[in-house]
Image 1 (cartoon, rainbow, N blue to C red):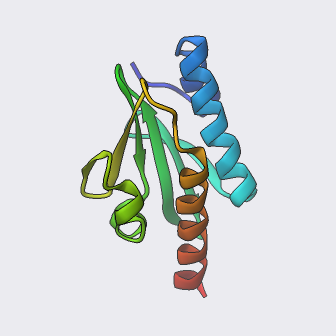
Image 2: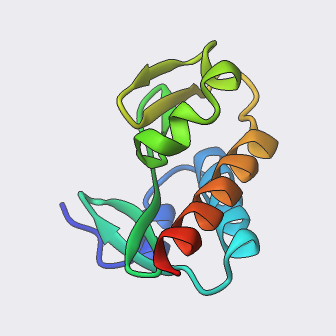
Image 3: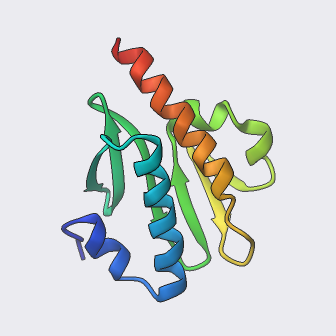
Length: 118
C-alpha cells in the first residue's frame, strides 16, 4: 500500500511511533528548511540540491534511518552499538531514540550535499 505523502505515512502509525517520526521530520526541517520531501521506496525521503539527503521508516521493532553510506561512515563509532547495513541503521523502539545523533548526521549530510553541489 503506497502512501501519497509524508503526512499520510506518519498518520498510518500508532501515536508513540507517530511522535518519533514527526520528531525526525522536524529535525530534518530544522537542519534544512528547503529540503525536498517525498515518498520513495514507500518511506519518507528528503533531497537537497537534487541529491538524496536521508530517508527514514518505521518497522515493527525499530526505526530505520538511511543517510547514505557516507553519512553512516562519518558516524561509525557513534552508530556501532546499533544494527547496521550499508548506509542504514536500526534504532530499536525499546530504547531511547538518539535524536541528537540523528540531527548531527542530517547536518553532516546537508553540508556534504551543498559541498558536492557547489
